[in-house]
Amino acid sequence: MSLESQIAKIIEANGAALYDTEVVTEFDETIFRVYITKTGGIELDLCATISNELSPFLDVHPPMNGAYRLEVSSPGIERKLTKPVHFQNAIGEKVKIKIPGEERLKGMLKSADSNSFVVETKHGDETVTYSQVGTAKTYYDWNN
Image (cartoon, rainbow, N blue to C red; front, top):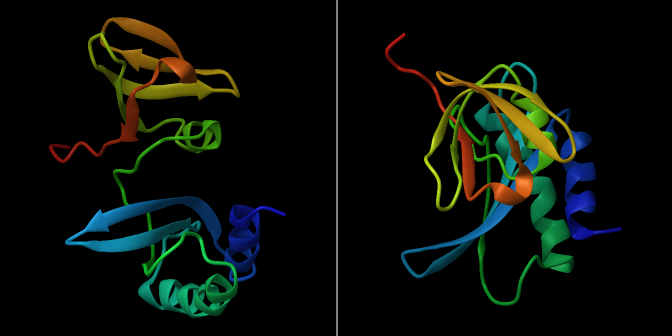
């Protein structure tokens, strides 16, 4: 069983779901971030509970070599889309897609499957395969 699926089991036992993980370096410190989601939103107490359960597990099964800090949080209202399941769960939301060498797409995510997704733009529907994507994220229109 992969480390990610073991992390997911611990999170699911607490009524949430694993969204993604990432390793970042900020101010010479390595951070292992675990993003979680839950219908109705994520509360700070839930992040603390999951962090307290993940910490001893990761002490035994470290996600990387060397020292790091564990962070458990929500991916936020504007979140990265990196896996087909992220796109599938974001159907109906506004997205920004960067495709290397092309114009940026912006619009509403209409559909997504395991190979591609469709964005409704002001120019019509655009179908994009995941392999074309440089970066993708949801965005919130603060002007509405």
